[in-house]
Image 1: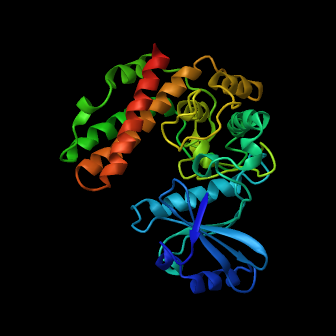
Image 2: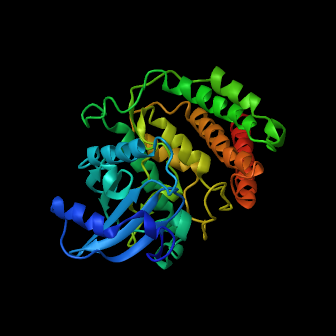
Length: 352
């Protein structure tokens, strides 16, 4: 994730004096909060990195204008991070969470700072840019992390009530279809006429849906911009941004990885292009590597990839609809509309 000066942007959103007092009350570090930096990188939530007593921390809180469910989402994310301790899945270590909105105005939580880089937002450092073998292993590391996460037992982690796994896949198609229909409330949105034909994609998903499988934990937004790699090699430093995590069918994460994985020329629908791209694993390599680390049946892996394209396209088109109504920047709306169209075309190619 990229960093910005602590004097810019969100300065009024984190009262560091109150934060320091809250940390004192829980025995978390000592002294002043130094080296404060706002982190950016594809999230609407606010991230503040700082040091205290020689230890790096990252505070995560909702955006400047929180949604009604923002506080609950913060606490859900903190819960899953705490449950993953010792699981073998690379993730930011949870330090503590705060549900008391009197402290900073919203719920928030603290994590240990992760030492690593985000290839989707920051590009490749010199070591990774110069070594095709490292770039190949980066993709394999992502596939393996998704498989490792999917093998975890939600009940053993204390997450048995973290989602509604029964009927999970059926609800996905219905849920995102309803969301697409809701965009008609935005004046100026051209509607389905402005998108590749999405009806056959929804029909194919309904008629080819796999049977429900054993539930597992899924990240919910598993792509390159939500992964940090180690500076000294191809291994993952952490999967980040767990706000969409739940208990359901873990193969949804594999589908999202495939749907968002750059094409052979390195072009990407969502994140910035990563260069050089040669050496990175191909999509079929990711599937094969996932299969080596998971007992799950991958016969229908294309269905999960198509579902991910369908869902992500609808999410991105929502910003386009809001932009046409003057509720989001026009340039952002057009960029994400183009990405949504690309995802739907990718889904159509998988179906064909």
